[in-house]
Amino acid sequence: MAAALPQSDALVLIDGYSPTAPAASRSHNPLFGLTREALIAAMAEMGEKPYRGRQLADALYRQRVSHLDEITTLPKALRDRIAEAGWEVGRPSIAETFRSIDGTERYLIQTGFQTVETVWMPEGDDSAEESAEADEGNAEGKLPPTASGWKRATICVSSQIGCAVNCQFCLTAKLGLQRNLTPGEIAGQVVAVLERHKVELNKNRVNLVFMGMGEPFLNYDAFMAAVRLLIDEVGIAAPRMTVSTSGIVPGILRFAQEPVRPKLAISLNAPNDQVRESIMPVNRKWNIAAVLDSVRTIPFRPREKVTFEYVMLSGVTDQPEHAAEVVRLIRRANLPAMVNLIAWNPGPGIAFSSPAQGAVLSFQQTLLAAGIQAYIRRPRGRDIYAACGQLKRTTAS
Ligand code: SF4
Image (cartoon, protein in one colour):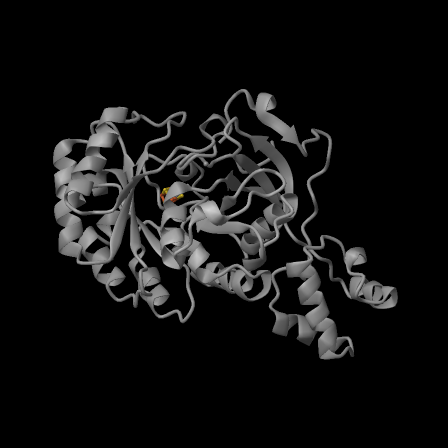
């Protein structure tokens, strides 16, 4: 699921932009993105002991350095040798920041010669929070606010530049697929945003949703490598992460085999195959039944649920009969499930309309009355095109 800039960008751009600044050059040998073992191996090649690799890992992922010179645990002579060997930190950096009136921030993050979009939502994305709280039995009220006033936050992360899935309601789809992101470029978005907000992971509650640009399961290996880095090195627990897929069945089947994995969300968006095919061409390859069959292979953790994301398009997916069909579909699915209702966010060049508030509420009521956990996702950052389905602008042109 994914985010484009309105014509009035200059009004919301708050920092980082210089029309004359050259794009950051692509690092040829980025250390960021390498596992601890790979860093140890790189140090061994330079004749250094394993602890130097561990120091590098700590500097990259815990201290969040962005330049070799900041790694003060290494002697200067070694830092110089690392640079001479062609290495650099190479972590993606925030090139531009757009801030919404609701506190949401959308970033263009430099990855090589292109930028990718990442979103910071203080106070979180309601849906992800709900399940995370439930998983861990925590009461949000017990959390002290941070110095900047937020108690918890969600970072929405991209896995590709553009997307090939071509959901008809999504702005990202207009870009087509430009390229897959590397593990370092995926994990780097998170670390760059954590550093911007000086997040202390042992004190602050941060959730990740892989729902930015792209289809994570069409970049599966890099996505999962990034997840492992984020868990093992950055220190974010797997239950605090949710990945959303449009229903790439081979990816879901692989995901089910992962010993450690995020929670899963399925971008359902329609009550039946006919409607789904009309708005999500991927449904012709893997229909709803095939997707549900694959989800049933996942060994769910205690209290874990699969989330069905449901984008509401006026007259297309928001009618009372659609709600009744969704109830039947979820009952038949026989899965631990919850539903997130997302009122479609408008985007230029897309001929759908947002549903009336009453339609969203009555849809939710139908699900709740049937005993199905259903949440209405609060739109975040619509004014800066950071809301679901609005991520598009990737080049700093
Ligand atoms: S086209 Fe579909 S799968 Fe791709 S980013 Fe948009 S909503 Fe997600």
